[in-house]
Length: 46
Image (tube, rainbow, N blue to C red; front, side, top):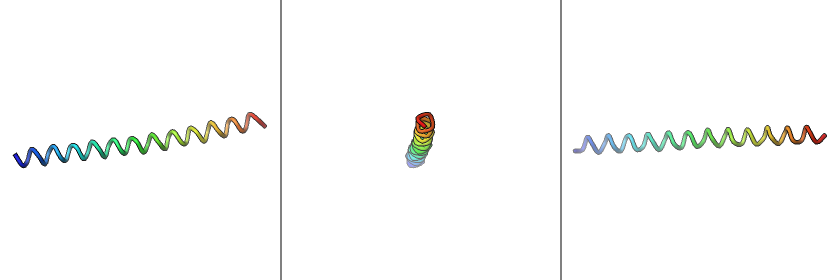
């Protein structure tokens, strides 16, 4: 029983880590895209 609990806890933690990692990557990509879009807009205005 204890082993099963450890497995479930470990997989849950891993899933949370993967989700938070993906979230971090997504935030980085989104902010990078935002910076690129802003730069393009500023370039086209000049």
